[in-house]
Image (tube, rainbow, N blue to C red; front, side, top):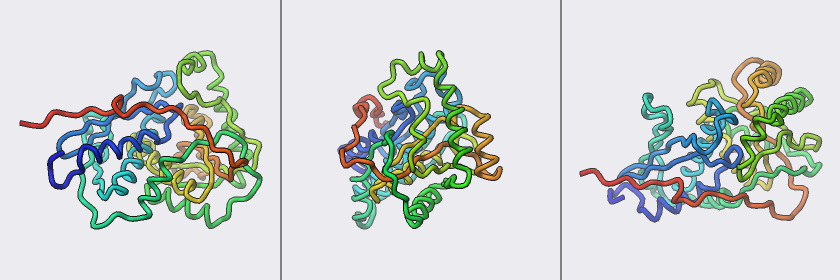
Length: 296
């Protein structure tokens, strides 16, 4: 990338290598990056997940939104501001973002630290320690979601209903059709997660429920996960609600009061052990990045 206001090829590869660590449903990593002389393009790669698991593409777009937030953090840590144009081509719904760059005056130590957190963050599917999360931390996580146009709502008084909705939605994952579809995945998520510990359960929601909202909630998800990891919390995103419209509507009515659309649920809490969480396999960067030839 020869333009003076664009990072070098090595910098782009460094940023995208970090982005490979972004969370995604069933670890499917459904993003595809096209690198041009002066821009970086993000596309949805629907071939990464069987259609039976995500017929509308909701979960995969959310996953791409998380990758988009990761790439913004990565470039900021390298001294670049990522100027993102979301859904730049309405005629091409799989084209999720076009990114251009401008140099930052200085590299923020906070963004460097956040990039370090992004490289180490893990999803914790185990039980969490029975220790409350301080209200000020939950307030900070809500603020992180709002920065990315998401809404994080703790389901304290509606916890039993939310647990029931997740269990009911999990029954869909136990069907033979679903089980057959996930058989060959690297990291199939369980039908029903741990729901009996003291973890905080919070609904991550958006005001709308279209592709732009799904992309935004993915960015908000990443922002919340990184903010939580920076404070030593462990997290586990739960996608079951996104797969069963009836349960999603129950949660919308009860937890959100009919305002907004629940996209997923987060388990938040403290690690039960000092043992490091396992690192899930990731695609090599070459599998998800293509270098476009320069324009003549």
